[in-house]
Amino acid sequence: GLSMGLWGFLAERVSERTLGMVSASVGGLIILGVMLNGNEWVALGLATLYGFAVRGEGAVFNLIIARYYGRGSFGAISGTLVPIGYVGLGIGPPMGSLMHDATGTYFTFMVTLVVCHFLGSVALFFARTPRLPARLTHA
Image 1 (cartoon, rainbow, N blue to C red):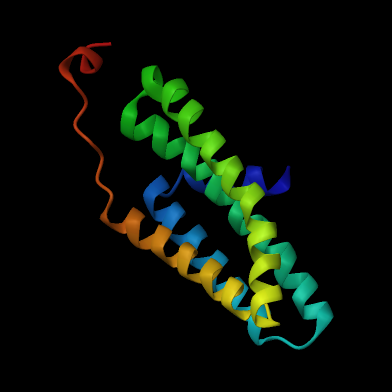
Image 2 (cartoon, rainbow, N blue to C red):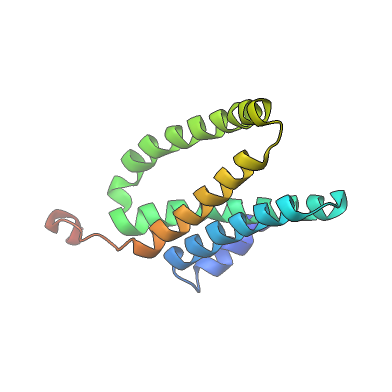
């Protein structure tokens, strides 16, 4: 949709690593904004922005795999990582519910999400393009 077009436009002008760092950081900041906000209309707007930010993470993730490991490895790598991501998406809501039941608030869960976003950004900051094997550099 619209967000994919925006991220695609940006990806043609900015490195995928930088976009990933920005996307992950913005996602974390938006969650912080939701935590500090008391107005449901502002929260709805932030949730919409969050959708744009995390959709960018998904698009940039694919670009990073392709750029860092080549097209020949894209299927194997994404075929391994995508199911892991889906498991994470499936675990998130029950984990949030369990944390709420244990503490009476979503605060700990939201802080966990913020930390995960910022850790992702830090990991991308330190990521470097791996050197491709000789068999892939002549393709």
